[in-house]
Image (cartoon, rainbow over all chains, first blue to last red; front, side, top):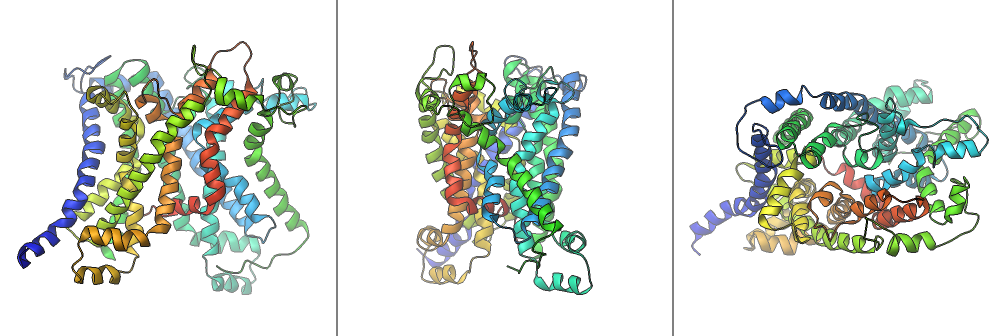
Length: 295
Length: 290
């Protein structure tokens, strides 16, 4: 090989090597997305037909009470399943930072849900939350005659049954991230605060918590998209019921596609869901890339 | 690691710390306890109202039933065993292929500068945020047209493609990796591939373990792709478990359901017990660093 062609190859090889990955992610992620986007502008019902109807499916979508119900449910679900794990995880991390015994055992007991699927966790929780078989039955058996714990079958409370399981599943890893964050804070910061005579809770809240901002940010960034996509949990716990009381957008999308044969409407709702995810993703990614270019 | 604060060794604060920790452990461990004790109980125990206590009489019957005879449909009564094996047939190849491919892509993205690298990074990072519910419908159409819906190969393929963004984890790792070795190898005339196999792969072991475990867990636990894309005679374990617990029976067999749930969660739980620290590392390795 001549020196010049060798140089040329060196220049292009990375592009050639990474291009299968690029082509594949382009076709897979974006080709399919564009296709779904196109379907959302057709009148497809049971099968895909290419009759263009403009924005009609979107108009239909936003006239649909159960879509609004799923958005309203998301508005109640999202702040709780992002906020509660952050607060509880942070508190647990600070408690574990007090030189407690059995630290590793406690961490294991809080973190293991991370390894389980929503289906396994949801199967167990479903029986725990069902009044006839779980906590309520146990409470009555233990002598609390009038005990009631039936959120899962109450239309007004069923979304909070999902919240319990989601918080149970994700608090552990938030805690782990906070512990890692706490342990990486420099000693001198704390010593300086102690010399100033600050009390311990005050040190944690006023001195350590602000330095943990990047940890809070990255934990929220794992929790938020996961919460937006919640599907398995709805299927296994409530099937969206009772009635439509625990339907979330991803479940709505799936339901239109596969159970009601409303392809156009399903596609329109999928695009709205994607836009919602993009509102979280794009600012974050652009920020990250900017950082990366500055280094 | 810093020294932790000198705490008061006893007193009210100490009680408060241990009390709240105990309550949290009770809450988080409750489902594990519930599943395990009930999977060893005869059904009569449960009907009598003993749902959280130890079995009055220990039995292995629910386990045998969940593994080999429980019904997962109107006429299929073979327990979870087939689902379990079919899941392994998807998870093992998909984990190995997606991890190695991600490693290669991550290395190229980190070490070989080329035009358009930012655009590639943007597309990959956006991929992490995309909801799977968006893809299952077009994929089901693609599957039926390409005749992929009769084997598990298609599912391996989908998981591999969906996992392309794991390249970012490797990229972050290799960005902090000293360039001298690679430079020396390049001066010696080694090409991209040779450098990858001889120099990069052996040094990437820690991140390979982290991403491998993450991929195994994610693919084993996947439900939505398995639900839509698996062949009807080769369903995977998450779907099998969901079917098993939804079969209409005169008397719901909660003890069998709990044993089935533990069986379906066992591979990833064992992995977690053996290699828990890698789980946590995987969580924080995703953010792009300079």
